[in-house]
Length: 81
Image (cartoon, rainbow, N blue to C red):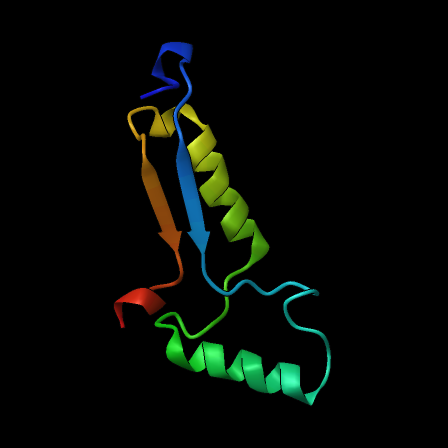
């Protein structure tokens, strides 16, 4: 409410596991961790950075112009399992 007069909407993104070089370094442990997350995520894979970027672009676009105080949860369904 403090920012509405300035036309500023506040939303957040809560991403799930995303396949990035920092998140998963090479090696057997990284492969095991990836396999674990793939096994517990309904799509059977880890999110891609492009998917996180698309969610952010949505929140920044006019397509979300009526969204305010919203947390977009992009976790591949893992939170619902």
